[in-house]
Figure 1 (cartoon, rainbow, N blue to C red):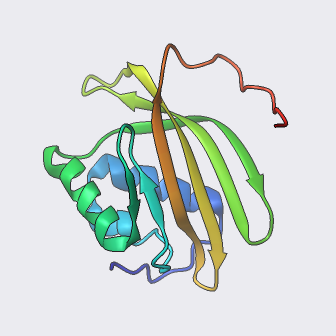
Figure 2 (figure 1 turned 90 degrees about the horizontal axis):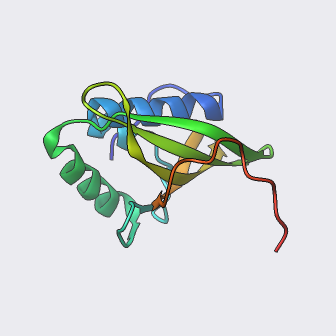
Length: 142
């Protein structure tokens, strides 16, 4: 498991580093952002649940075989307290020509504030039908 030698002080910094590592196809940088907990979870669009560092690393290595994937997270909705932050974003997948593709992915990223700074606990992404909504959706109670 890759380790980060510095403390990541904000959730925004770890999220930016996460999408940057995906864009560069840098597996070591990506895995260094995850919590050291064995219960970390990753769900890729159309895929099953992956638990733990080994399974998550293997899945990203397969994705990175063709290089990085440029993703631009937009329309952030965040819920945060001192120890945990949940970010829901719409991921715009950027084509090799630099334009957003016609598909969009809705993702939830869960972060934990650890003694070593903010780290990712979970990433759950799924392809959403239709075009991305123009405005954030209102909060609904269920």
